[in-house]
Amino acid sequence: QATGKVAEPATPCVAAPRMSQPLPKPENLIGAQIRVVTTFGEEIEGELFCVDIGGSNSVVLCQRLENGNVNYKWTKTNIIREVVATGGPPAGAIEELPGVDFSELEAKAKRLEEDAAQNAARYGVGVTEQAQDCYDALSKTMQAEWEGEDIKCMGCKISKPYDPMKSISGTDQKAVERVRKVLQAELGRMQKKPSSK
Image (cartoon, rainbow, N blue to C red; front, side, top):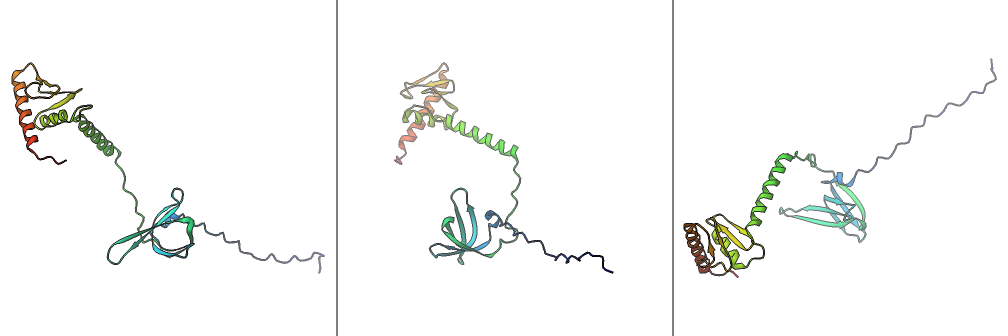
């Protein structure tokens, strides 16, 4: 018996449209084998070695040669017309970086700063080459330090013109004689060496 209602056609089953997968970031393809065709028709094949879109707008391809050598091809991305991936990155190509021990890094930086400060203290500021030669000669065997343009060593002071016979002063005569003797010997050795200039 008819009820007076018209049967509605069944709703066709339509599959939801597939969303296209977003392209991977170029830097995630590091290590992949690719072929690039430029707007000039040049074809370059190699391993994607480096990508810098934001800075230099370029890519670098690595070409490993049979003789063991490696070529690197640098190309601006604005001249690339086509890219074809010929192989993915090798398994395990992207490795996790090891952790950094910041306390060890800080200690190393501190040691390097101290070494640099000690090294800088060895050079007189505004002194002549002769004054620096005297300082270098003394510091080979004795503790020496700069005080302005004067050199202090074993409680003695060596002033301009840095003459071992006239420019050394101090209260301890034995120390003055010791500094004089060392300075004369070292300066004598330096004068005997042929000049490398």
